[in-house]
Length: 155
Image 1: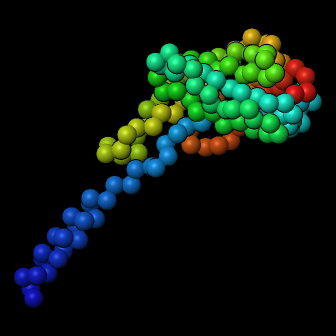
Image 2: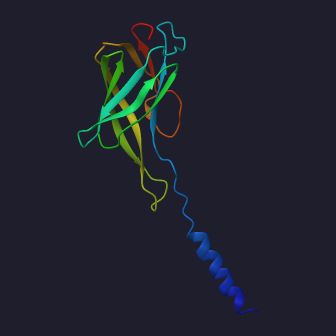
Image 3: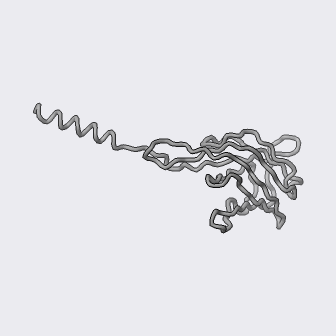
């Protein structure tokens, strides 16, 4: 019995060390809250589609024909210093450029890194959007509002 105890303890220690808990979903998203010019929360009444271009040159849809929403969660790229987003409502497009610093975030050396972001600026063409206010520059797993977005008219 005394000989089995060290083997049992070794087995327990080895099995405890082999358990790696990497996050299942490590997508980092920026949160855009729709606001009226008066500061009240706004609701989108027309269909909004948001697209961007991937690193391979292909367009990809991030939000498809959304309506009746007050908040938008959009993933951020970890390869580009500027994310270019095309907001389209009723055939009219506004281009939004979000400048940022990409910061690798390691949970464990055995897990793939996530990328957090520090927003350094935002620009838009002004076709649909009247104003974008940066509320919080740090983008991480936290889902609090990063941007307030005000459309020119009631969409």
